[in-house]
Image 1 (cartoon, rainbow, N blue to C red):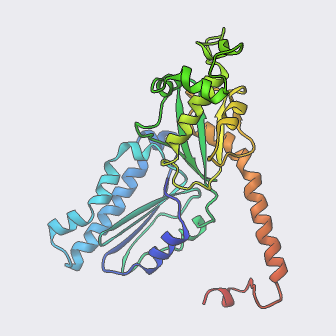
Image 2 (cartoon, rainbow, N blue to C red):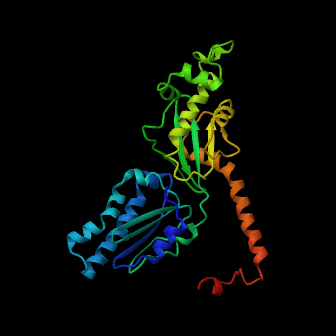
Image 3 (tube, rainbow, N blue to C red):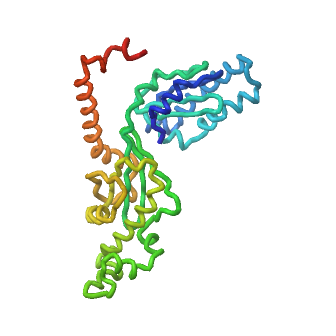
Length: 309
């Protein structure tokens, strides 16, 4: 997921050079246009126009033009990329630089070759980073999603992250480990809870806690931003067990209930955004209140003539 942050926007604003390419396209998320890859064909037309302009400028040779525009060529040929679009697409290409942003709103079809990037249609995409994670976990599967207000994508988990309770628990001497956690090294009357599975085939709670501890530890290096909220998605009885085992993940106070082993990313996004939106709206209200406090003091303005400089 490529979110337009303040740092990225500043970089685009300050980027200068010859043959800076800006392309905007309205895109499609489903339907005939996706099946026939209409958006890729539209980009190909813009690509050809830009290619001809660069060749006419005689700044680059034929081979240099092909090499310079190769990132755009690769994008056109990436069929999987065109099956996962939003409402708009912005593409920027410069010397040793290539970036694109999937936009949650439609844009006017446009291309420009210049000494800097054309950013007018990109500006609405800039927003504070209301990003979060969704951790979908069951005894048989682990899935991690990175999401924002407008999009979601599943993260490919490295091998060190256990993909199931069976995989996580296979590395431990659990009789010893669980007795240490319970403080019951001698076995005692509660020893039966530590052996095997329950009548329904599920692991008993101490085993589940050990599974979740192992999972949490393995996920720490994967989460780029430890402060982002993590929405837990699992069946009802696993929620309290995971929360009791969790020590470091910034779990959202509410989670999603159900089995999400086979649920598609878009459905998970739709459900999770209902949980996260009130938090975002509260933050916006705080910003508005701050503006109201500063209005008329000379420290805030709605006048573009004051703001733009």
